[in-house]
Image (tube, rainbow, N blue to C red; front, side):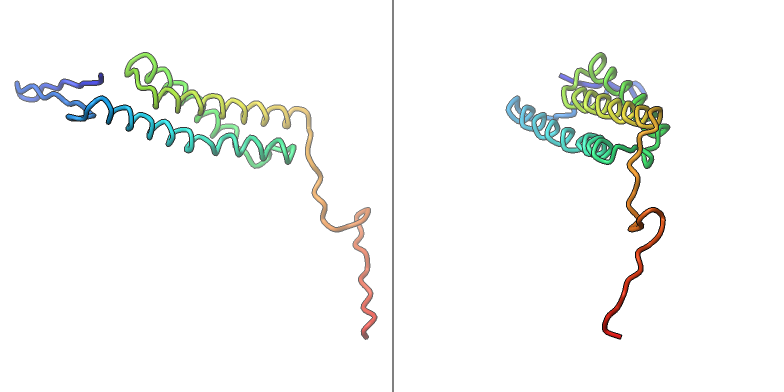
Length: 135
């Protein structure tokens, strides 16, 4: 159980984040937070799916996802080794895997030069002339 003890001006303050909740309430809160972190991190896998379907990661910032990866490795280690919080550990793990997939896809499409050419409505660089027979 997570309990923090602080001393301020000689007085000892105990802080239990669950308060006086029973063990059943703690499990419910843990399940709710697990659901929330799974839902929250789903955007990473959505972004990864878009990269794969478009075969391009030009709109993805490598620096931003590298920062996201590094900070969530630290969060995962903190949750796993220090706090022992399952929701924080799951969140960190989901973010680490998701950010790693996106960084890998970014590097793959950047290095291979693979890019889907956009159809701008032209044929061989010239637009077809539209003929209006109502004139």
